[in-house]
Amino acid sequence: MASEKGGMQEGRDKAREKFRQSTPEERERVFGEGYFWGEKSNYYGDKGYRGFDSDRYWEPVTEVMKRYLEDRAGSIKYLDVGGACGYLAKRVPFRVENTHIVDISKFALDVAKADWDKTHPLSKGQRQTKQADINEGLPFPDGFFGCVTAMDILEHLNDPGNALKEIARVMEDGGLLITDVPITDTLAGKIWNKSDKDTTHISVPNREEILRKLAEAGFQVTELRYATPLPGVQLPFPRINMQTVSVKTTMSADEIMAGYKDTFPKATFLKPAGEP
Image (cartoon, rainbow, N blue to C red; front, side, top):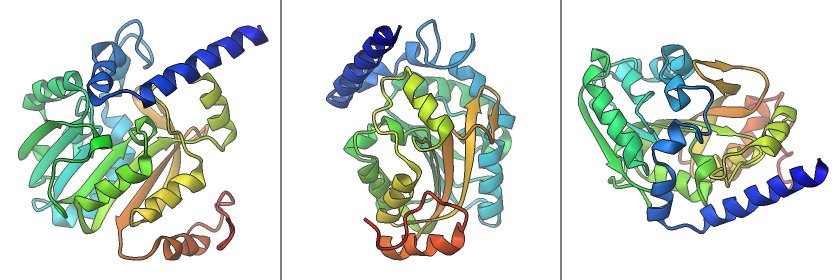
């Protein structure tokens, strides 16, 4: 049994390295229909990824957006990076000036475009989908967006730190970034990572790493929470994923990280200032 598990893990490691070395065209093919639903899908149940097309599932994110940005309704340009089938983008809780979804998957973007005709009217406006690989950059000008979400995307990327810097480039100063990523340094995270079958998960960080990468890109985290993503609901326990709410700032990474001692006094995973 132990040798069988070891063989399975070795196979996943090889598949992840193959994905890491793949071209944009090869990566696009990976994220086809079979990735999102079907017998080989990495998502739960018969619905596959469609199980996440739920108001309740996205409520923790839309609540943050509303709390931070509702007073700017109508003037916000919004981007969902790795937005897949558009399940979050169509639930923006107020009218926005522009809504954009970027994803490497043409299949997922086609689903989003077909579904947008049924979108809740509050989220209607100028809506666009763009097929792009964030590993290669984002097709937008500097300082374009006031709000960006990047939910369960960073773990799929070769260099999440560079991706966050590219996200920062296309955001206005003071803009809001919401991220969600699986983590490796909680008990639940460690167990989940050992059993994770998704071989596109090549950059799963620990908690300090993701806050450091955000800081190095110019993002100051104002809120963090834990979640376990399940079809239709996000549970606060066990702690498999960490979600962050950040603001783009001109502070240095060291200044941002040093401030977390007061902002998150119970975050024992953060190293003391100055410790390597």
